[in-house]
Length: 388
Image (tube, rainbow, N blue to C red):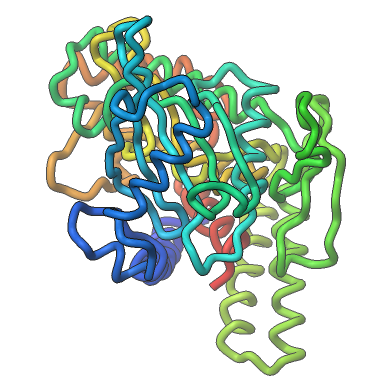
C-alpha cells in the first residue's frame, strides 16, 4: 500500500472537518454565565438549583437542607450536569455526587445512556463511578430523567498530569493500559450499541447488541460473554455497500461518491490482509484526557474514573487502539501528530511510560496502534459509525 500515508492524510482531513462541524453543533458547557441558559433554552440555574435541592432531600430525607451543598458544573449538549455534596455529622467527610439530567428538547433515552454503565458494572473491573439512583421519567422534582452517580476523587488528568511524579505517571500508564486491554478483550458478535433487555429489573441487567442505523437491515443479537469474533472486513463492506446502493436509489451524488471511495479503500485494505482477524469488541470512542479523572494523592492507582460512556458501542477493536501519546509525548499547546506516536520518546522517563502502557495494553493494542493502514482503518470505521 505505497500511498497509504497519503490516503490516511486525506481521510483524516475529511474526518477532522466532519468532527469540527459536529463539535460546533453538538458540544457545549454549563459555564457560570447565562450562556448555557440561552444556548439550551433551559431553566435558569438560580431556580433549577432549588429543584435539585428538593430532589436530593427526597432521596436523603434525614439530611437537613443546610447540610446539602449544590455546585454548578460543566455539562454537554445532551446533559445538564450538577454536583452536590452531603455533609453528614456522623461521617464528618462530605459525600460527593454528580447529577446528570437530559436537557429539555432532546428525545434521548436515559436507558441508552445507562446501558454501558450497567454492562461495565456486570462484566468489568474498570473504574466507573458507582450508580446511586436513576429515574427515566419526568415525575420527579427536576421534571427530567436523571442519573445520580458517586463523584470520583480528583480532576481531569490534563490538570493533574504535569505535576505528577514519575512513579505516579507510570502507574497511571499501567492503569490506562489495563483499561485498553479490558476493552479489547470484551468481544461482541457485531457492530452495534448495547440495549438492555430488562431495564426495569432490580437485578443485574441482560443485554442485546443492536446493529447500527443506516447500515443495512436491523439485526439484534443477545449478548454473550463468550462471543465468537466478528468479521470486520465483511461488516465494513456491507455498511458501505448498503449506503452506496441507498445513495444511488435516492440520486444522492455526494453520498454515492464518498461511499464508493470508502468501499474501495475497505476492499484494498481487506485484500492486503489488514482487516483479517480483527475482532469486534467494546469501544469507548471518546478515550481522551477530559474523560479521565486522576487523583495524584493515590500514587499507586491515580486513575479514579473513566467518564462519558454514553457513546460506547461494539466496534472493531482497532477503535480502542488509538495511541494516547500525550502520556509519553506531552505537548502543552500543540496538536498531536499520530504519525509520531511510535517514535522513541526523547527522555528515559517517557520511554519507560510508553513501555509500561504498551505492556499493560497487551498484544492487540500493539498490533493495531501504530501502522498507517490501521490509522486509515480507524478513519474508515468512523465514517461507518457516523456517516458523512
